[in-house]
Image (cartoon, rainbow, N blue to C red; front, top):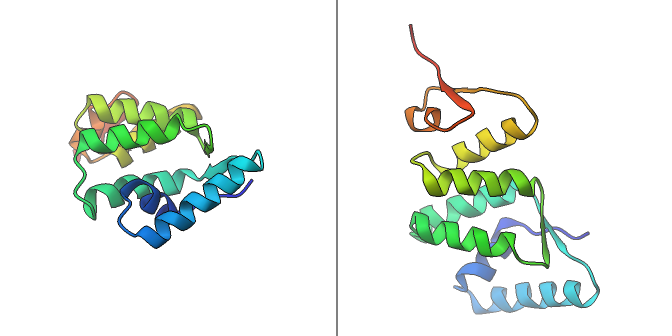
Length: 134
Protein backbone atom coordinates (compact mmCIF):
# COMPACT_ATOMS: atom_id res chain seq x y z
CA UNK A 1 0.00 0.00 0.00
CA UNK A 2 1.48 3.36 -0.97
CA UNK A 3 1.83 5.98 1.77
CA UNK A 4 1.46 9.75 1.83
CA UNK A 5 3.76 12.38 3.30
CA UNK A 6 2.45 15.43 5.10
CA UNK A 7 3.20 17.80 2.23
CA UNK A 8 0.95 15.83 -0.14
CA UNK A 9 -1.94 15.93 2.33
CA UNK A 10 -1.36 19.63 2.98
CA UNK A 11 -1.60 20.39 -0.75
CA UNK A 12 -4.73 18.23 -1.01
CA UNK A 13 -6.39 20.01 1.94
CA UNK A 14 -5.17 23.60 1.58
CA UNK A 15 -5.07 23.77 -2.23
CA UNK A 16 -2.48 26.53 -2.22
CA UNK A 17 -0.30 25.18 -5.04
CA UNK A 18 -2.23 24.19 -8.15
CA UNK A 19 0.55 22.03 -9.65
CA UNK A 20 1.09 20.06 -6.44
CA UNK A 21 -2.66 19.78 -5.88
CA UNK A 22 -3.09 18.34 -9.38
CA UNK A 23 -0.29 15.83 -8.77
CA UNK A 24 -1.79 14.81 -5.42
CA UNK A 25 -5.22 14.34 -7.02
CA UNK A 26 -3.74 12.27 -9.86
CA UNK A 27 -1.98 10.01 -7.38
CA UNK A 28 -5.07 9.54 -5.23
CA UNK A 29 -7.32 8.95 -8.25
CA UNK A 30 -4.86 6.45 -9.75
CA UNK A 31 -4.63 4.51 -6.47
CA UNK A 32 -8.40 4.51 -6.00
CA UNK A 33 -8.81 3.39 -9.62
CA UNK A 34 -6.40 0.52 -8.93
CA UNK A 35 -8.39 -0.46 -5.82
CA UNK A 36 -5.67 0.71 -3.44
CA UNK A 37 -6.01 2.90 -0.42
CA UNK A 38 -3.24 5.25 0.69
CA UNK A 39 -1.57 4.76 4.06
CA UNK A 40 -1.12 7.74 6.38
CA UNK A 41 1.38 7.22 9.23
CA UNK A 42 0.39 8.58 12.62
CA UNK A 43 3.39 10.93 12.49
CA UNK A 44 2.08 12.44 9.24
CA UNK A 45 -1.30 13.06 10.87
CA UNK A 46 0.38 14.74 13.82
CA UNK A 47 2.49 16.92 11.55
CA UNK A 48 -0.53 17.76 9.38
CA UNK A 49 -2.41 19.12 12.39
CA UNK A 50 0.59 21.26 13.35
CA UNK A 51 1.13 22.59 9.81
CA UNK A 52 -2.53 23.53 9.42
CA UNK A 53 -2.41 25.56 12.64
CA UNK A 54 1.12 26.96 12.54
CA UNK A 55 1.55 27.64 8.84
CA UNK A 56 -1.99 28.21 7.60
CA UNK A 57 -3.70 29.70 10.66
CA UNK A 58 -6.41 27.07 10.96
CA UNK A 59 -8.36 27.36 14.19
CA UNK A 60 -9.22 24.36 16.32
CA UNK A 61 -12.70 23.84 14.83
CA UNK A 62 -11.29 23.91 11.30
CA UNK A 63 -8.56 21.41 12.20
CA UNK A 64 -11.12 19.11 13.78
CA UNK A 65 -13.30 19.29 10.66
CA UNK A 66 -10.39 18.60 8.28
CA UNK A 67 -9.16 15.63 10.31
CA UNK A 68 -12.68 14.24 10.70
CA UNK A 69 -13.19 14.42 6.94
CA UNK A 70 -9.86 12.74 6.24
CA UNK A 71 -10.51 9.95 8.77
CA UNK A 72 -13.77 9.13 7.00
CA UNK A 73 -12.25 9.14 3.50
CA UNK A 74 -12.40 5.61 2.08
CA UNK A 75 -9.26 6.14 0.02
CA UNK A 76 -7.12 6.79 3.11
CA UNK A 77 -5.98 4.25 5.70
CA UNK A 78 -4.64 5.77 8.91
CA UNK A 79 -2.12 4.12 11.20
CA UNK A 80 -3.59 3.84 14.71
CA UNK A 81 -6.90 5.15 13.39
CA UNK A 82 -8.84 4.34 16.55
CA UNK A 83 -6.32 6.23 18.69
CA UNK A 84 -6.46 9.16 16.26
CA UNK A 85 -10.24 9.26 16.52
CA UNK A 86 -10.04 9.19 20.33
CA UNK A 87 -7.38 11.92 20.26
CA UNK A 88 -9.55 14.06 18.01
CA UNK A 89 -12.49 13.69 20.36
CA UNK A 90 -10.33 14.58 23.39
CA UNK A 91 -8.96 17.58 21.50
CA UNK A 92 -12.45 18.68 20.43
CA UNK A 93 -13.77 18.56 24.00
CA UNK A 94 -10.80 19.80 26.02
CA UNK A 95 -8.05 22.37 26.33
CA UNK A 96 -5.04 20.14 25.67
CA UNK A 97 -3.43 20.38 22.25
CA UNK A 98 -3.84 17.66 19.65
CA UNK A 99 -0.33 16.26 20.15
CA UNK A 100 -0.94 15.71 23.87
CA UNK A 101 -4.32 14.15 23.17
CA UNK A 102 -2.68 11.81 20.68
CA UNK A 103 0.06 10.85 23.15
CA UNK A 104 -2.62 10.00 25.71
CA UNK A 105 -4.77 8.09 23.22
CA UNK A 106 -1.81 6.04 21.99
CA UNK A 107 -0.63 5.14 25.49
CA UNK A 108 -4.18 4.27 26.51
CA UNK A 109 -4.60 2.08 23.43
CA UNK A 110 -1.67 -0.09 24.51
CA UNK A 111 -2.68 -0.07 28.18
CA UNK A 112 0.25 1.99 29.40
CA UNK A 113 -1.18 4.57 31.78
CA UNK A 114 -1.02 7.13 33.10
CA UNK A 115 0.93 9.44 30.84
CA UNK A 116 2.88 11.56 33.29
CA UNK A 117 3.26 15.19 32.24
CA UNK A 118 4.23 18.65 33.47
CA UNK A 119 1.60 20.10 31.11
CA UNK A 120 -1.37 21.19 33.22
CA UNK A 121 -3.79 21.17 30.26
CA UNK A 122 -2.73 17.68 29.21
CA UNK A 123 -3.00 16.46 32.79
CA UNK A 124 -6.72 17.29 32.75
CA UNK A 125 -7.31 14.64 30.07
CA UNK A 126 -8.35 11.18 31.28
CA UNK A 127 -5.33 8.92 31.05
CA UNK A 128 -2.81 11.60 32.00
CA UNK A 129 -1.53 12.76 35.35
CA UNK A 130 0.32 15.88 36.40
CA UNK A 131 3.81 15.27 37.71
CA UNK A 132 4.32 17.54 40.69
CA UNK A 133 7.71 18.96 41.50
CA UNK A 134 7.33 18.08 45.18
